[in-house]
Image (cartoon, rainbow, N blue to C red; front, side):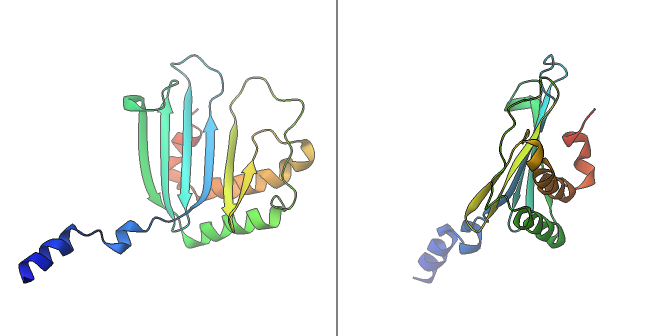
Length: 156
Protein backbone atom coordinates (compact mmCIF):
# COMPACT_ATOMS: atom_id res chain seq x y z
CA UNK A 1 0.00 0.00 0.00
CA UNK A 2 2.83 2.38 0.85
CA UNK A 3 4.45 1.69 -2.54
CA UNK A 4 1.17 2.55 -4.32
CA UNK A 5 0.90 5.81 -2.34
CA UNK A 6 4.48 6.79 -3.19
CA UNK A 7 3.92 5.91 -6.85
CA UNK A 8 0.78 8.07 -7.02
CA UNK A 9 2.52 10.90 -5.17
CA UNK A 10 5.28 10.96 -7.79
CA UNK A 11 2.75 11.07 -10.62
CA UNK A 12 0.66 13.84 -9.06
CA UNK A 13 1.71 17.36 -10.10
CA UNK A 14 3.28 19.46 -7.39
CA UNK A 15 1.23 22.53 -6.48
CA UNK A 16 4.29 24.79 -6.61
CA UNK A 17 4.99 23.68 -10.16
CA UNK A 18 1.37 24.05 -11.25
CA UNK A 19 1.12 27.69 -10.19
CA UNK A 20 2.13 30.03 -13.00
CA UNK A 21 2.86 33.63 -12.20
CA UNK A 22 0.83 36.24 -14.04
CA UNK A 23 2.39 38.49 -16.67
CA UNK A 24 3.38 41.92 -15.36
CA UNK A 25 4.89 43.44 -18.50
CA UNK A 26 5.55 42.80 -22.16
CA UNK A 27 8.03 44.66 -24.35
CA UNK A 28 8.45 44.40 -28.11
CA UNK A 29 11.03 46.03 -30.33
CA UNK A 30 12.11 45.50 -33.93
CA UNK A 31 14.34 46.81 -36.67
CA UNK A 32 11.54 48.07 -38.89
CA UNK A 33 11.31 47.22 -42.58
CA UNK A 34 14.70 45.97 -43.67
CA UNK A 35 15.90 43.24 -46.01
CA UNK A 36 15.66 39.84 -44.25
CA UNK A 37 19.40 39.59 -43.64
CA UNK A 38 19.27 42.76 -41.49
CA UNK A 39 15.83 42.45 -39.91
CA UNK A 40 15.31 41.41 -36.29
CA UNK A 41 12.55 41.32 -33.68
CA UNK A 42 12.71 40.92 -29.90
CA UNK A 43 9.92 40.21 -27.42
CA UNK A 44 10.31 40.26 -23.64
CA UNK A 45 7.86 38.94 -21.06
CA UNK A 46 8.28 39.75 -17.37
CA UNK A 47 6.18 37.81 -14.88
CA UNK A 48 5.04 39.16 -11.52
CA UNK A 49 7.45 36.78 -9.77
CA UNK A 50 10.37 38.36 -11.65
CA UNK A 51 10.99 35.67 -14.26
CA UNK A 52 11.95 37.21 -17.60
CA UNK A 53 11.88 35.52 -20.99
CA UNK A 54 13.45 37.19 -24.01
CA UNK A 55 12.95 35.87 -27.55
CA UNK A 56 15.10 37.32 -30.34
CA UNK A 57 14.50 36.38 -33.98
CA UNK A 58 16.51 37.33 -37.06
CA UNK A 59 15.06 37.92 -40.49
CA UNK A 60 11.31 37.66 -40.49
CA UNK A 61 11.24 34.31 -38.72
CA UNK A 62 9.13 33.73 -35.61
CA UNK A 63 10.34 30.22 -34.74
CA UNK A 64 13.13 27.82 -35.48
CA UNK A 65 16.88 28.28 -35.72
CA UNK A 66 16.61 32.02 -36.46
CA UNK A 67 15.19 32.55 -32.96
CA UNK A 68 16.96 32.36 -29.61
CA UNK A 69 15.35 32.42 -26.18
CA UNK A 70 17.06 33.74 -23.06
CA UNK A 71 15.87 33.75 -19.45
CA UNK A 72 16.74 35.89 -16.44
CA UNK A 73 15.42 37.05 -13.09
CA UNK A 74 14.32 40.68 -12.56
CA UNK A 75 14.93 42.31 -9.17
CA UNK A 76 12.04 43.21 -6.89
CA UNK A 77 13.13 46.86 -7.18
CA UNK A 78 12.80 46.73 -10.98
CA UNK A 79 9.37 45.09 -10.70
CA UNK A 80 8.28 47.82 -8.30
CA UNK A 81 9.62 50.50 -10.67
CA UNK A 82 7.51 49.08 -13.53
CA UNK A 83 4.39 49.03 -11.35
CA UNK A 84 5.04 52.58 -10.10
CA UNK A 85 5.68 53.96 -13.59
CA UNK A 86 2.52 52.30 -14.91
CA UNK A 87 0.37 53.48 -12.01
CA UNK A 88 1.78 57.04 -12.00
CA UNK A 89 1.40 57.37 -15.79
CA UNK A 90 -2.37 57.72 -15.61
CA UNK A 91 -2.64 55.40 -18.61
CA UNK A 92 -5.23 53.23 -16.84
CA UNK A 93 -7.61 56.17 -16.44
CA UNK A 94 -6.67 57.89 -19.70
CA UNK A 95 -5.19 55.48 -22.25
CA UNK A 96 -2.68 56.78 -24.78
CA UNK A 97 -3.97 57.66 -28.20
CA UNK A 98 -2.28 56.60 -31.43
CA UNK A 99 -0.88 59.34 -33.63
CA UNK A 100 -2.60 60.33 -36.86
CA UNK A 101 0.84 60.87 -38.44
CA UNK A 102 2.67 57.53 -38.13
CA UNK A 103 6.38 57.40 -38.87
CA UNK A 104 7.37 55.58 -42.04
CA UNK A 105 10.40 53.30 -41.74
CA UNK A 106 12.57 52.72 -38.71
CA UNK A 107 12.14 50.36 -35.82
CA UNK A 108 9.33 50.42 -33.29
CA UNK A 109 9.10 49.70 -29.57
CA UNK A 110 5.84 49.00 -27.76
CA UNK A 111 4.55 46.99 -24.85
CA UNK A 112 1.91 46.40 -22.22
CA UNK A 113 1.66 46.32 -18.43
CA UNK A 114 -0.98 44.48 -16.44
CA UNK A 115 -1.98 46.17 -13.17
CA UNK A 116 -4.93 45.05 -11.02
CA UNK A 117 -6.43 43.06 -13.88
CA UNK A 118 -6.22 45.96 -16.33
CA UNK A 119 -4.06 46.03 -19.44
CA UNK A 120 -2.16 49.23 -20.11
CA UNK A 121 -1.24 49.37 -23.80
CA UNK A 122 2.06 51.12 -24.50
CA UNK A 123 1.75 52.30 -28.09
CA UNK A 124 4.80 52.55 -30.30
CA UNK A 125 3.55 55.80 -31.82
CA UNK A 126 1.33 57.72 -29.38
CA UNK A 127 0.18 61.28 -29.94
CA UNK A 128 2.69 63.88 -28.78
CA UNK A 129 0.72 64.64 -25.60
CA UNK A 130 0.91 60.98 -24.51
CA UNK A 131 4.47 60.19 -25.63
CA UNK A 132 6.14 61.11 -22.33
CA UNK A 133 3.73 59.01 -20.25
CA UNK A 134 4.17 55.97 -22.50
CA UNK A 135 7.93 56.56 -22.70
CA UNK A 136 8.37 56.49 -18.91
CA UNK A 137 6.67 53.11 -18.61
CA UNK A 138 8.59 51.65 -21.56
CA UNK A 139 11.81 52.98 -20.02
CA UNK A 140 11.00 51.28 -16.70
CA UNK A 141 10.50 47.98 -18.51
CA UNK A 142 13.70 48.44 -20.54
CA UNK A 143 15.64 49.23 -17.35
CA UNK A 144 14.45 45.93 -15.84
CA UNK A 145 15.95 43.93 -18.71
CA UNK A 146 19.47 42.81 -17.73
CA UNK A 147 22.25 44.71 -19.53
CA UNK A 148 23.68 41.50 -20.94
CA UNK A 149 20.56 41.40 -23.18
CA UNK A 150 21.14 44.86 -24.67
CA UNK A 151 22.49 43.26 -27.85
CA UNK A 152 19.03 41.75 -28.42
CA UNK A 153 16.98 44.90 -27.77
CA UNK A 154 19.21 47.23 -29.82
CA UNK A 155 21.63 45.09 -31.82
CA UNK A 156 22.81 47.85 -34.19
